[in-house]
Figure 1 (spheres, rainbow, N blue to C red):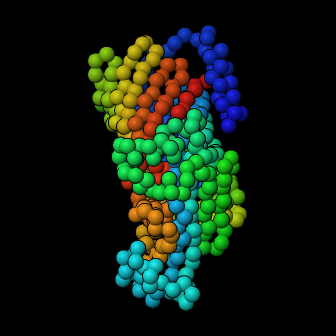
Figure 2: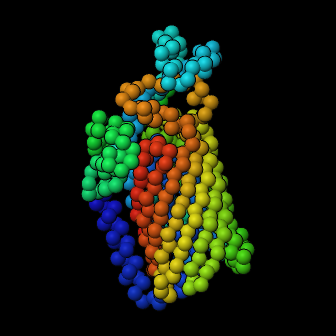
Figure 3: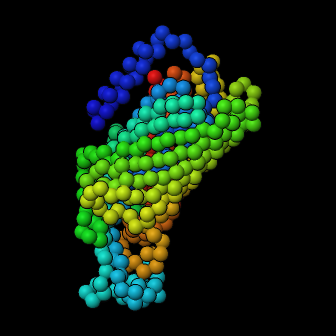
Length: 400
């Protein structure tokens, strides 16, 4: 962690020295300024997911993006059984999911079993570098990394267990609605066991680099004129997952569209919308944990951003972002899956039930741009899937 902070500060100081002899450029419209907004999902971190591109052209210079993102995850231990025999699956379908445990006899009914538990604040460190190939082509590289922490103050504030439960007790949610107090605060423990007995086990201080990504973007020629304030781009994405838990290659495509409305005093309002599709594990090159059963992950992202100029070479922006992703597991499995766990609260099952439901989140983003861009955001999943419950982040975008 200290090395990452020192590296970030060094990059900023170097850029400041290099820019001293340069005159400030004029403000130009580049699209929607947004940070990396993919969630710190305890299992999703091991695969490639699309962060949609709302830029209207490649960067004029090589650009380095560095972020630090905190996400509080809380999923009490749940064990799941997937019946193998069609007759047993048909029997389970006759019962509502939370009643199946009473009629399922694992000693005589063959099944695959899985376990999942997550309790930590995950701190992710995505690093991107973007290259302009031409006026219409861009190539970008990303390294994903994260560390598992207890999430104690001051390194985690509104993402800490203490703050979240204070909020629930005093503002909204009620007293200990997710049994955090019952199990105890400031834990760092992530465990997942697949149907073959292969497992993911992470604890405090465990640092991983789960993937390296390559992204290519094409910007149509009409983007360069922007006479009607309408812009588009298309992307091809590949990710190589390199952790010992998941050694696969993912492949995907995406497309985004932006519409901007200009006002007086160099202010503008921009609407952005993106769609993407990733094929998980298109190639496997080693041992891996069967993390998800859904081979395709598709996503939608929309944002409205308001930008205003404050000086000749600087501006602020504020944006509201919505992100949607389909379930990690196949929905049809939920018709017969059997879940067991400690029924401390009505939310005891979330570890597995939310692997079968779509994920939706809202993010409020603030940015300041001059020679470089600084971004802050807070992200909340109002479906309360607790993976993560709330996420915050800071990012700096540095042109060279």
